[in-house]
Length: 226
Ligand code: CA
Picture 1 (cartoon, rainbow, N blue to C red):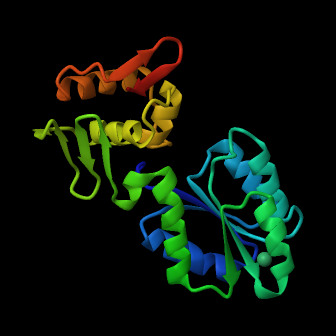
Picture 2 (picture 1 turned 180 degrees about the horizontal axis):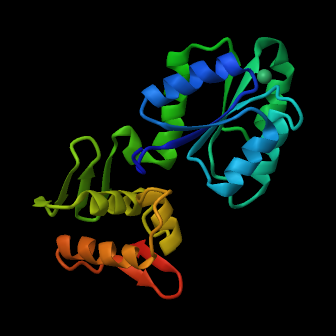
Picture 3 (picture 1 turned 60 degrees about the horizontal axis):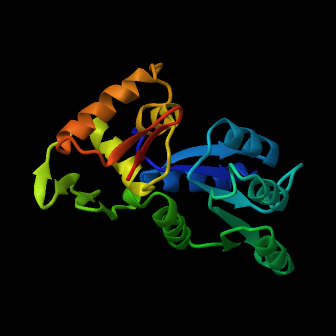
């Protein structure tokens, strides 16, 4: 599993529907986590924030709407895009759904093609490189499809880890990343690594970019681009 894959949390209580959706999301190249109910969904989000949540409305126990409301209330989870799924008969609830802050809404039965497009739309906002967008910052250009990086038009050679690291920085310029956050996003989550690994690779990335000061060390916090 590649750590650069966008992570989609799928919350659906009907096993057959969940299976079909999970299969199709994985076929799109996403890392899929599954939850059969709201409690499990909230637990998974608290362990590691997904990039997008596909959330069924009607769930046993904590409803989809309540999961959405709780996630949108907390600053750490507010920005995770949520796509709500609901049956046609629940049109009235649609309004409430939007009031709880769902980012998009898909009516069952939905077309898988359409749902995948909606997921990609949300990812384009939060993880642009994962859907093949070209990222730019000052004179650095990163083409996520060809994996080519240039600075002032000149090619920059990067190892795979440095490439993922630069992608992460370019997706959120000026955001300060802690070493732990970079470890969990750039490296395999299951790998047991020291945060000094991050320092080593940031050093290599700076060197590859020509000794740039574009990647700042933020004392006591981590690193930031620009
Ligand atoms: Ca359901």
